[in-house]
Length: 246
Image (cartoon, rainbow, N blue to C red; front, side, top):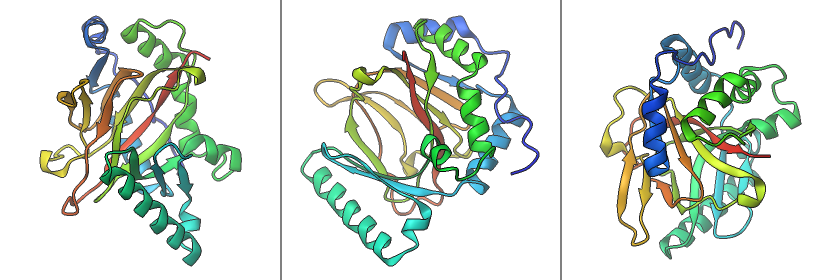
């Protein structure tokens, strides 16, 4: 998409001290209106109209599968996606880990040269630029954060992310982030909430997928994204990933 100018301009009016205090107390925080209005609107448009969505599906301890949009347009790819989705559902039915949602893996797309110099690559550059990293360091108090990965995600009808805790400390994961670009009037009945659980499985906090809101939370920490029901009229768009210490 040509003419990208305001893709990631951070709101200068953020109350960093208040957000830092909240993160220090709970290990998680939501920064509302994190980008300037023009920047958030442009990024939402990139996700809605300029993203070649594939599918991410995972079940149990097996390596998750990423299905490109090109693959899902073939009969073999469609069958493989159905099989993977059924496997995820079977795991979830047993109370085991499973997930299914649309995504665009930015790092993988860069390695494959899908859209050189495109807006998703520009976005990843911004996520690794001093402005964003300094913001996250200030809010989390973790000065060792040095880089971010990222993917565009879309939770449409029947999509979900099962209960897990992101225990990838060996890979340098410190903080997970979700930059929500859902539409302003997202209704609670449409699901897609980021929910945090205690050891007994009770929900102790939940974040609505608000437009232009950045969720930050320390990992590992039990959480999930609630099921989006078939009647939901739209998808929950976001940019998600982890901030690392190496």
